[in-house]
Length: 179
Image (tube, rainbow, N blue to C red; front, side, top):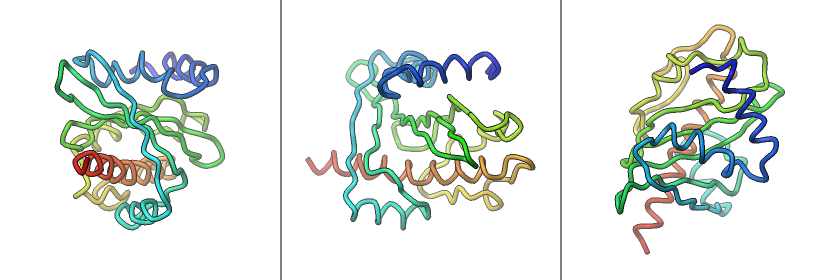
């Protein structure tokens, strides 16, 4: 990925869009799921009990009470899920797309906007280590993810966000099966 070119374009789209969904779908979602022919958005509104459960399972703070998952379809089948999420790394925001396989394992993480200095951004090869990880993985920097000199806060933040989003996806899928 050419970050020097892609980040300002995507950042401008997010700043100009009313919601991340509109900006993410044409580019990041299609890049994550090139085989998909449509995307549906599903909002998950977390009660305090649900958020508490997610925090315990993910070993991470859940600050938001709503998360939108995008369901990627090809025909009648599901080819994956994604969430666009923002969080503060050190003092500035990072926005990323976390794409999941149909079984819930991580397909890829794409950094869409990174407002911290570029040297704090983890390299693509570090992000690639998250591919295939699921709810059974620890996703902890210094444990199953190596630390990164100069990007420790970013790496920890991405790992923490990935842990709770993995659990939130599982929760969404469980709720859907109950219906």
